[in-house]
Image (cartoon, rainbow, N blue to C red; front, side, top):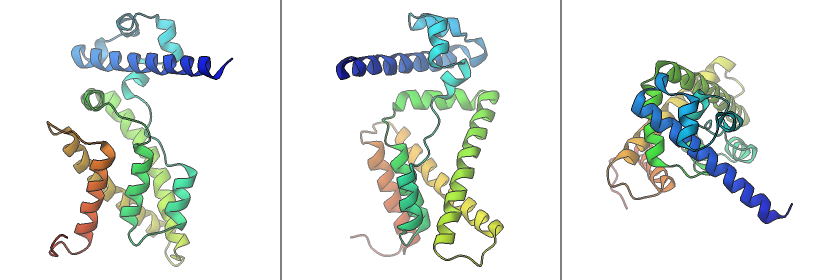
Length: 212
């Protein structure tokens, strides 16, 4: 098979996946998650339930969307061994690099979040998925602490500190999302997040100092 044909097939696959997810989210927002069927989603995309199941496997998967990507091994290596002076800033930078590798449809993202957090079973599933992701990141942060020579600290102490780093990072991302939702937003997600990181740096330094 030629590279061109393979590329065309992949683009068609991605387009169908995006269409199915969008239809599922929009229908759930309009009718409620429990009232949406795979047949309704398939009909909206002019395809068959069999195709839907081949792409997504379940209605739940269509609404939840792709899992939040974990940092690549190279990103983790830099975070652990090429340490800057502030673990929170470094952690945010690592997470943002992984989050912004794939473009995000702001309208679809907002609608998806609304459906998830107004549907208890989906909200519980999302919390469980996010909990698994955070546990992996806590282990990476603890590894950074050990690499920095924190050998006297117990595993429990390092895990508590790692948990706090993630809690603070979550607050920064919540602030960033609120900015992203504001009407008239016309910048890239990366630009907005980088501005948030600069704000964190100012706050962690001396916020009484004048800006340059």
